[in-house]
Length: 72
Picture (tube, helix red, strand yellow):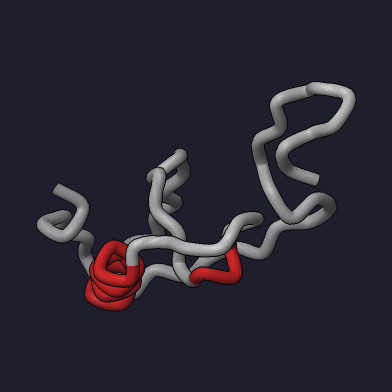
């Protein structure tokens, strides 16, 4: 559905959400990642002409709030 969005060139859009995809294997705190999913997600971003806004602060947006957090 994301690939088929018809965003007019003259309009500005902000698309936010948890897409459950990563842009590169460096975006994970554990090794791995599905290279094909990374490729397709980046292809969609390029096709739509989207820009990724930089994160400020923590590298990850989710934490399990435990004494030894999974993500830091």
